[in-house]
Image (cartoon, helix red, strand yellow):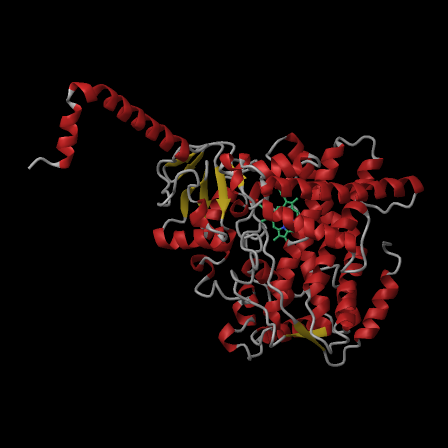
Length: 560
Ligand code: HEM
């Protein structure tokens, strides 16, 4: 019996059909090949020797499979395919993803000169940043980025921090002042995040413009936070397919581009307002020492106006979500029944280092980071709640030799900080548990399963063995604000813990899962789900007295 296939071919042999049919088939095949090439082509061709995750589809590559939560999906792929380093396609862009602690360390430290660049994205770079310049964290590596990174490094470096003591004092006092007032001296449950958002934002606004806002619900403060968060959402790949699938840019009524332009206009408005306010204060001789006034007054400066805005924008956007994300979630973990033991031990350790009482604690809280248990909580909060789960994307400027494969110059590098920070290979089987005591020496800590025990000896920090976690990135483009961020976390925590025991609400408790605590998985920086806590005043602590003292000391530091 003649098969269907052969019958079809034999018909092609007939003189009338052969010519047009062959032509049609050849054209169709050519179109299919062209279509396949066009829909699967990438900026960097397939990299031999680095496994590619199966299941990429035309045009979108792995974008749809990655869903909203890239870090968690990549972590699952690492476990499923047993490769910590693999390549994926984000639409027309090839990226290499690094997951394990050791591989992340190797690419960020071992190949830091190669992985120094940042990719350019259509929406963020082309639309949103077209007026005020790119932030440092989104700038490709060039002479201007080098200068801006240096200027930011000086403003945020160890020697400069001493000059910010009054600001740390004032802003952390305001947290406790408002905790006290809004909770009606502990009677009501409160959400802590709004006060921590103000803490983070006021710090960088003071640094950049010498301007702060006293109310946590100030209109300008809320506008900056809202616009900043919306822009951060537009930087994420899952929210912005048009960055990787160019055809989507030309869709009629492009909502993403329209939203980006609206956000750009709102951001320009407040950045211009802030800079004009500084100019005005300089003219009237009332300006406060800050980055923009120093640069505006310095005729010799090598930085352009756009570079000054870029530095201020980088500092403001660097801290306003990362610090609240970390500190709010940390307070959430401490407030749980398991967290009570950590709070008690932290309080004991604070008292051990400052035996004279709460005034001594408050006076030193912003000058030094000497209480080991509090340092351990800060480290663990940053590690466990990896608020920037996929860090900031990098790009290679030269070829990277990787276990026999060559990752070419110009390849996007994605760092799965969440996966690296929870690697059981590095942190042990309890890598997925919030346990500050992992940062303390064995003799001084108790195990998480025996949290009611008292430590055997005073807590001591484990000697540093280089990189502790990847929440601040590492290497040539590591976070410029790490030192100041750590100090802010430490100061706020030591002041809060010295006044109150924090207890989670039973009706609205915190979500302490290191993935699920985040309500917007697609955002570049995590936004913790809302929760409430009760503040129980510590026995014998005169909170009103401490607040009065701090009020007197900080009055006049900075005016609104
Ligand atoms: C808990 C707080 C913070 C976290 C978790 C955090 C995290 C990060 C991460 C993951 C990066 C990318 C690092 C890399 O590519 O290796 C980064 C870059 C950066 N951060 Fe932070 N950050 C925090 C606070 C701050 C603060 C307070 C500032 C400024 C006041 C700041 C300024 C910057 C800048 C300027 C960059 C860009 C560095 C570059 O690209 O050269 N950060 N941060």
